Length: 386
Image (tube, rainbow, N blue to C red; front, top):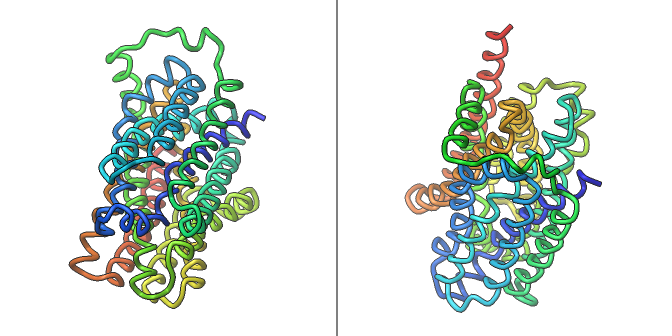
C-alpha cells in the first residue's frame, strides 16, 4: 500500500510534467508563437524544478518527506487549474514555472521515502516498480494529451491532470505522514550545508549527478520537438506525437517489469553500459524518419535503454548518504532536470544551425558516451575500493 501511494505521487508529477510535449504545436497555434518558443513550456517547468531542489531536499529531511509531498502536490494542482484558463502564453509560462517549483518536492522526496522504507537488497526492484508507475503516467499522458489535443484541447487535458495530482495529494496527506519525532528537528542553512556535505563527501555523487545531467540533455532535449518534427515531415500531428513520445514510457515500463529477471545477467555497471548503448542506437536511428509507427518503435527501445541506465544510477544515489537521503535525491533531481531544461534549448539551437538528422545522431552519440563512460567510471571506483 505504501509503495502504491508513493508511486501515485510519482505518477502525478509525471502527468503534470510530460503533458505538454505532444501539445507544443497546439500551444504555438493557440497563442500565436513560434514552435521553438512554445517548446519553452518544457524548460519553464524543468528549470525551476531543478533550482528548487537544494532547498526542498533538506526541508524534506527535517520537516517530513510525506508532509512536504502533500503540500507540493496541492500547489501543483492549483497551477494546473489556473494554467488551463491561461489567457496568454506569458501567463501559461508563469504557471508552468510555479508548478515546476512545487513539483520539486515530489519525485526526489518520493524516491527518498522508498530508500527509507526498503532495505538495500530490495531497493532497486522497489525503485523500478516506482519508476514503472511513473512511466505508466508518461504513457497515459503522452497518448491521451495527443488525442485530446484534437477533441477537448490542451485546456481540457490540464484539468484532467489537475484531478490526478489532487488525488495523489490527498493520498500523501492521508498515509505518508512520518511520526512527529521525525519532523521535529531544527532547520537552518548550516544543517542544509552539512547534509549536502555528507552527500558530496561520497565521491560517487559526482558520477551519479553528472550521468543523469547529460542523459537528460540527450533524451529529453528531443521530446518537445517531436510534434513539430512529425508535422514538418508530413508524418502526423499531435495525436501521432503522443504515441511516439509514449514509446519512451512503454519501453521503460517493459524494462521495469522484467528488471528482476535482467538482474540475473547484468551487474549494475553492466546495466549502465547496455542501457546507454541501446538508447544511443534507438535515438540515432530516429534520424531515418521512416513513419510515425517506426519512430514509436525506436522511442520504445530508447525508453528501455533509458530505464536500464537511469534506474542503476538511482540505486547508487540511494546509498550516497543514508542520513541525508532526501538531500541526495534532490541533487539527483536537480541535475536531471537541469539537463531537461537545457536539452530543448540546445537541441533547438542545433536544429536551426545543423539540421534535424545531425542533431538526432549527435544526441544518440552523447547518450552512448554517457552510458559507457558511467559504467567505466563506476567500475573503476568500485575496483579501487576493493
